[in-house]
Each structure stands twice: as structure tokens, then as C-alpha cells.
Amino acid sequence: MSSFFAFIRPLVGGIVRTTSEMFTRLAVIGPKDIRAKRFGEFGSGSSISWPTGSGFGEKWIWIGEDVLIAAHVTLSAGMGPGQEMLTNPVVRIGDRCLIGRGTSIIGHLTIEIGDDVFTGMNVYITDQNHGYEELDVPIGKQLPNEEAVEIGKGSWIGSGAIILPGSKIGDHVVVGANSVVTGEIPSYSVAVGSPAKVIRQYDGNSWELLKKKNPNL
Image 1 (cartoon, rainbow, N blue to C red):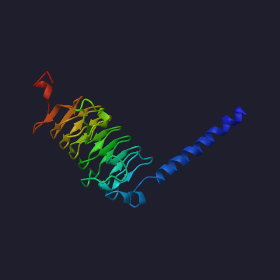
Image 2: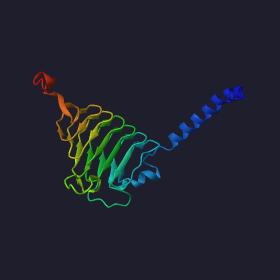
Image 3: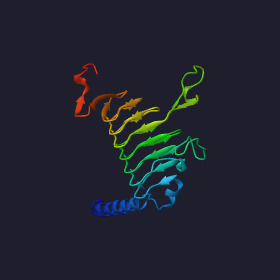
Image 4: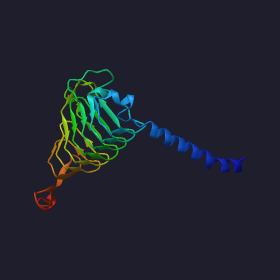
């Protein structure tokens, strides 16, 4: 029996893997799919890989052209299904973006992602945080605060990075892996850490390492 199982297992395993891969490719969401019609915009050449992450509020999410959204990515607008939003779009993803596997983009007010932005895996982007000021109310029950988020064109957001409300990331910016962005990052710079700080910036002629100027950075 064990020898038969050893013989048949590779064959059955291959069939299962091939079938799974085929169905995964078939399940990709493209512009002509019914699921794509839920979105406010879904540009030509764009796709959302299968399996998708959880999400809702698609009518307030705009996806540009030639965007690749990897598997297990959460795209949400609002707190739950059926919520009416105050802005439209709530989440806008520009053209030719790549959103890495396991990333979550959760908007309530405005999240603007420019053209040609790439993210690594498991990036978290949100424009809302819970309040904490009322000492007699649990933080999870306090009214949230919302601040718009912007990510400029041509930027790279490293794996595991967190982009918090009010963040304004310029054009052609590198945000290092596992960094936490809480404020403004100027264009043509590299930022790392928690909170993220600029360590390198283009000065018009070359990329300058800021630590050379200030060793305390």
C-alpha cells in the first residue's frame, strides 16, 4: 500500500497543482469581468490576482490602467459594506502601479497613489486612526481621525512598510522595508526607520547621504 501511495502521490499532486494554477489564472479579475464593474474605475490592462483579500466599497475605488494587484491584497473604502462615503474616489491608484502580495489599502477620506508606484509585500496604507484623547472611553470605541494620504509617482514602498494618516510622500521616493511613515517625505529621497527619516536625497546633481552632514541622523 505504501509503495502504491509513493507511486501515485507525485501524479495526483501534479494534477492538483496544475488544476489549481489553471483556476487561479482563470479567477484573475480583469476590466471585462463582472467583478470589475463594482469599481468606480477599472482601467484597461489592469488585473487583480486571485485569491483576493477582503474588501468593500469598490465604487469609491478607482484603479488606473495597466495596474497589477497581487493576491491577498485588501482594497477597502469605508468601515463596511453599504457605507456612503463623503469623497469620490476614496482610494485612487494611478497607472502602471504594482501592489505587492498581502498589502492592505484601507481608505475613509482620501488615499491618492500616483502613477508607477510599486509596493513590496504586506504594506499597510490607511488614512484613519482611532482617537485616544478621552480617558474614560476605550481607544477602540473612540471616534476616528482622518487625514488624506498621498504617494507620489514613481515611488517604491518597501515590504512591511506602514503609511499612516496625513502622510505625504513625494515623487520618486524610496521608503525602506518595515518603515513607518507619519508625515511628509520630500521628492527624490530615501527614508527609513520608525518613524521614517530621510537618509539620502537628490540635490540636483547627485544623491547625497545626509549622514555625512549630520552624523546624529
